[in-house]
Length: 228
Image (cartoon, rainbow, N blue to C red; front, side, top):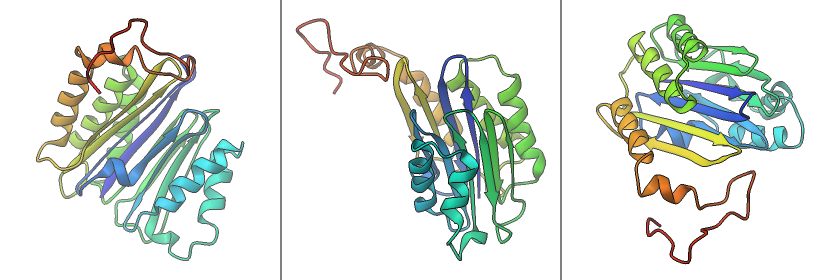
């Protein structure tokens, strides 16, 4: 059904997540993040938005990724139909894959990196995603798209792909939250959207909105750009 990846750049303090699926609206269903909490990808045969949001809240209060997941899934009798990975603000990761998830379903967790998938061609899909993220030297947003492409090239979702999403949270840049909710080639369209987000006038406008390290940032000129 879905494969996803979460990562943390310790040096730059940047969190990044990406996901792709053979169904609609993967960004809305799967990915959530907060620069003061970390990242979560909640997916599966019957994904729980409550898991996703509960994990973020727990990590915000200082719980580790593992503790947050354990708290979220503890009283859920349907948990074996679900899958989740989380990455906390220290870069620690954890995951859970229910034993009723559609095969192949598994996850990989290590410091600063988590990869998960269900209804994918095999474990090699996740290994391909992990390898791409770990070895790529491109900017983090491009690295994440390259990782999705590597997953697709390795077999990806057994149904093909219909939607894809990218989330990047940086202390020195506005959030990047890009979603292709329905497309015959969502990775191509996501790449086009990413490229467009780096063009004027939109990119210029981003330099005038608040960021984590400057929450009062505003235009230095009297006239605002008219993007929004």
